[in-house]
Length: 200
Image 1 (tube, rainbow, N blue to C red):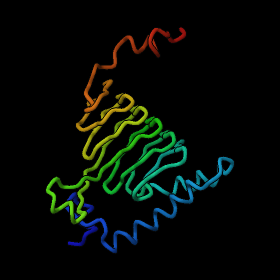
Image 2 (cartoon, rainbow, N blue to C red; image 1 turned 60 degrees about the vertical axis):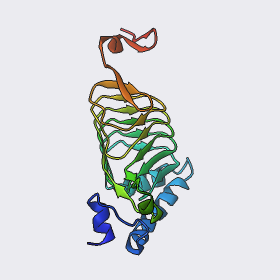
Image 3 (spheres, one colour; image 1 turned 90 degrees about the horizontal axis):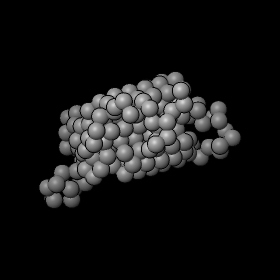
């Protein structure tokens, strides 16, 4: 089994394998081009954006700079996705993102991990576990989502959270480690921030 095949199957592998590195660099060149676009180069930016990912729906936007180990090659994004600046995808494994997802600045989704066993880390070996993010999820500023995590539909992840375990749908979750604090409720349909009400 090649190192690339091990990588694709969640097994321990060598990320510095020559074949892997050669393929990875070609995608990183395209990512470099995206991040080097001027704000006025809207069409060029969007053209590159839609070429980066394994899959991406309509109405999506990512504010540069965007950081990604594979330039988005292993990221699957639905429609009407928005990510603010410094969105980072450690996409050695696959990342699946649903429709209408909002990503605040400085959010990291990381599929890659390393063994705790010291001699294995000394060899720079790695494994990957896919991340799944449902529809209509909002991930707050500076949050980090770790390998293998699933976040359910409609859930809000608070700023600065470290998401180490699955978070169910319709939840408000935050903290380090991130925990469900409450379910989305009737008050959320009346107030949008503290004591500020939606207009009727």
